[in-house]
Image (cartoon, rainbow, N blue to C red; front, side, top):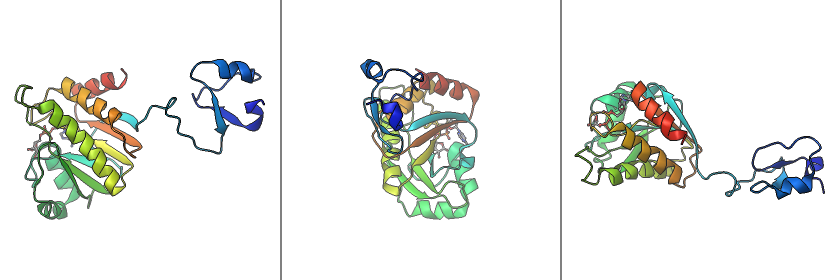
Length: 214
Ligand code: AR6
């Protein structure tokens, strides 16, 4: 049967030339007809597992996503950088909500509502302080991204925006941090559909652009 006559599409997303022979199309490695267009099929062999990734330059507090991630400290009671911006934009109720959480360990993550932010939730995570790279910093940073995605699943957040955790006051080299951020998000199974990496400066943005296209 000619799949195109029945409104079939190719899982690779590549439209065949009109009139292409269906049998020869099936013979192309990695390309096969998988069903009518009205049916949504997730083909693991053809669609990489994981959310859609985007890199943007901007201020994370303006992001209209289900959850933004805050690069916090273990007290969860505010600070500078992203943390300061998030608390200012969310308003004083955020601090009150954070007090209820009783702090957060390095590499862990906890959620609050977003209050005055466009984002519905804030996922607070605590990245490692850079100490030269031999104090388990890479593992802790990967844990942050993994835990944020787990928490996003728990609260039903399908769209999420991350800052470049630990690359500011905590001193993590941006190149290495970016590699861990993108690699961990790509390698973590979750229900999150869209991840935006929001960079505040051009140098970090360039790192992400490079990383995401490799
Ligand atoms: N939106 C997006 N990214 C931002 C923003 C913003 N509004 N502001 C800064 N960045 P940092 P850390 C970038 O220092 O290194 C706080 O005091 C920034 O350019 O916010 O994890 C906490 O309370 C950098 O690339 O977080 C902790 O004590 C990245 O976000 C400590 O800083 C992270 O910078 C956490 O340090």
